[in-house]
Image 1: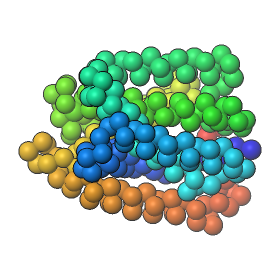
Image 2: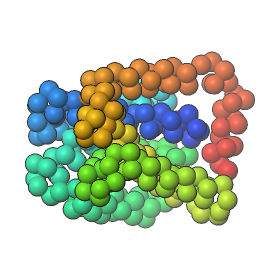
Image 3: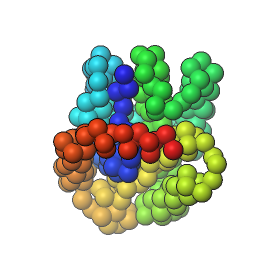
Image 4: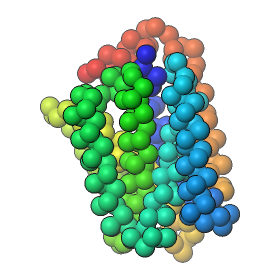
Amino acid sequence: MNKLPQITLSFWIMKICATTLGETAGDLLSMTLNIGYTFSSIILISFFIVTLLIQLKSKKYHPFLYWGVILSTSTAGTTMSDFMDRTLGLGYLRGSLILVGILLSLFAFWRFRFGSMSMNHIRTLPVEFLYWITILFSNTLGTALGDFLADDSGLGFAGGALLIGGLIVLVILARNFSRVSNVLLFWIAFVLTRPLGATLGDLLSKSHKQGGLAFGTIGSSLVLGTLLLSLVLYSMRPDRLSPQNIQLEEQETAN
């Protein structure tokens, strides 16, 4: 049984919201509460492992559980990236390049070991486990890439978000007006939404002097958490789970 959601517009909105929340919540733990990147990584990776094990043991799709794992990969990815880039001193660029190599290796292993990387074919335990590990490293890469664009590239938070947003628009255009594989475009979009979330998270939480909106990590996390909760509840409406809507969403995914 496929325990993953259908890929619709609401999926992408919740994905961006969850990854942005992961950025602000990860910074809240490591920086605002001054726990540090090392201990924050241990705490959040442990949270990821717990939620992942529950997800793997489940027998069907549970929206709260699924988005809980997405959120845990985002928060863990934030602290993992900060640990690599700052504590280990790799810097944003080298950290991003290392993570790109890891992610490409995961994609290559997945493709040659299990075949299709489509969301519709994630129906066995090994493939689902690989799916979540890939998401964890894609979110870690997204944090490093977002920080690189916002800080080292000179684009700033807003500029980085606009650049990533523009790339996502190109993916949407390719999805509708080209013959590029939908599976490839899905994973490109999935990776790109993480640095978008990272830059949006920084834009919301950083001070005015740093080019942000000064909501802080606490205020930003509360707003984003409330929004994500509302979206998950909306996706669970009875009419959204009707056989007609499920069939329509499956057709849209197949196309």
